[in-house]
Image (cartoon, rainbow, N blue to C red):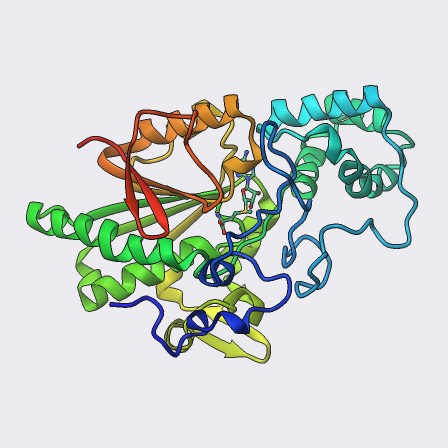
Length: 353
Ligand SMILES: C[S@@+](CC[C@H](N)C(=O)[O-])C[C@H]1O[C@@H](n2cnc3c(N)ncnc32)[C@H](O)[C@@H]1O
């Protein structure tokens, strides 16, 4: 079954809006440009908070939403020493590596935090994060400011088509044959929930009424508590659904003025929780899965951290399980443990059975 029928918005690349990334840009033949805060070795980051981020406080339709400094406020400058201190602190806490040429983004985004705490410099802010009684609460806010939460329903359609037709189909057939109707999917770095809910929709479409006899759980984790709170609510704007087939919107969402509420039966399939992917011990506590989606997340880590996280995914996967990563991400020089399977528009990384 085609995920996106000819009438779907995805079959008409010309409908793409300015600033649109992900699915539609893939269909128009252009790789989606990741909006990244960092990536030590290779990538050219473009924005701190992507357009449409619920945390950006900017219009989701603004193509340059993440790039402009906070309006009407004076930016506090970070000295080279302060930058290194803060960069290393952030890396230590969540694995995100902020390259030297992204310094201005730190200044733009963190100046407000510093002022709200009645501090004057980045040095004072660093000491606050390290030693103040409010350090834990501030760390949560820091994570919210530095992460890019851009996402959408049905992001990267060619990959989802392969997921539906190849990965999921084979897994469901295998489970049916074994009589063990238990499926675990992990959406690591789930942002505001569009990815795990999309997977829940695809699963529901694949199983239809049969789903009641299955034990299915989609574990969805993120570093940011704010995005998790939004994900649990399951209420979205039209923009979040910009690449979703119309029939799917009709079947799985209830429209209330400008808001789209996700169906309760999909909510029941997804379990949201906080995780810091750079924490090896925490990752070990995640239930083992047949399928892991970790898309547009490892792009923020340096190679060392990528290797650590990918190894943890490998350990988490059950034999024969699959890892799917973002369109602009690669395991080249990161892991040789998986067997790559090449499909039109995507690579599936499989653990040996
Ligand atoms: C660009 S979004 C990707 C969302 C979704 N996977 C997709 O592709 O549409 C990246 C997400 O990774 C999360 N993230 C970044 N660093 C993380 C970490 N160390 N642990 C867990 N999540 C992290 C961010 O908070 C953000 O929500």
